[in-house]
Length: 537
Image 1 (cartoon, rainbow, N blue to C red):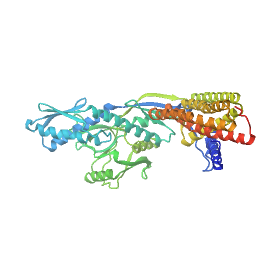
Image 2: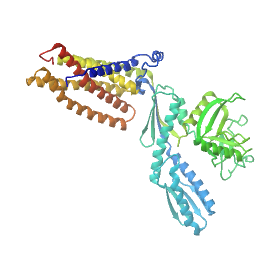
Image 3: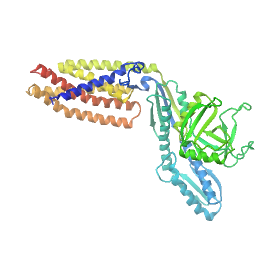
Image 4: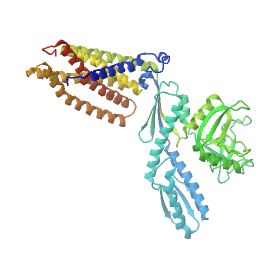
């Protein structure tokens, strides 16, 4: 273990040099880094919410809305299926977690039940996913059939809704350009969002507070003559987004419940200017399925109003002048630059499966983060100095060699965190302090083993080599078990806990290099130059 080939020496020196190169950008202002040539490393360690300041949001998925939407769709499916079979029915309605319908013809009850049982077989093909099994439990009480959502289906929908919401939230936040957001599931129905550097979360709250479910529907045939009162079957009354100056209220539109084209088929949306009017609009593009459906609808309904509905509010209801076959369209309606861009972001990111409610909101000021950074630097500096003094006093020259390796070790940790663009939090600073102790702990094990061998009468080289060999397995075991713990913390933890795990894991890797390789190289180099007959340990 005391022999180093020339290429090994060069490789060790190259690793140390690379560590310095990748660590230096953390001590240079970002404005200066951006002016340097491209090949120069510019990655820095990102500061977490507790160090940099920012916004903390705890969101909750509205599962009641998920269930309500499934029941509404189920009512429509039951109505359509029974009408196709010409089976008479009455009293079709949605209850808390079930749909009931009364079959008029008792002799056709069995046929109706078999048909309705088939509705659950494809319930998991929607955006919520599922377990692959039917989500319905159909029972009969006389001529009344009850279609109840199973508990398994509800759990599947809750899990899938939260997972999809996390993905949509991540897309929306990424569109805003925020660096290193932390988005994680918390509990069964909540999502934790941490946004470092964001001290005004109002825009983010607007983006996350909108479901952004867009649909394209035709106005009901009775819309032109509707003056209020009972809403015709198959229709619903929706408010517009603009205020009517005559009434001071938004206009109302009588639209068909049937969705002609779903906004889920949008492939892109961008804010832009209308070439003729100069007003801000949102240009959208459909995927192949949406383009075909949009073309079919506009071809067969020329001259009819076509409502663009966002979150149950009609943005606009233009009249179809001619078939639109290119899969492209435009949304207009008193947009500003900001509102047009926000709508484009929402449409590009996709619709949430259910509304999100802000359960908790906190804003951490940059001053508090600066105080935390200052305290962390002081703690690291004091700990670093005390460790260096202890090693020098306890182990003499070899202690100083261990101190040099410790400095290189800290540089390498910062370099690795920079290359990974990891996020440093207060627990991460604690991890750096712990890395200091772990690094010198490995050296102490080696030095004590060497002392034991010297007391047993071994000469200089055999004592040093045996000390490294005997300490090697102990160090490997301790570091490996700690690494396993950190891996588990990373995969099962969230936020700052994961930051702590990343910092310690990087420290373990660099400690193995500095203690077992770099320190050994420096000790061997000193022995060969000095030809010492005793060990300064």
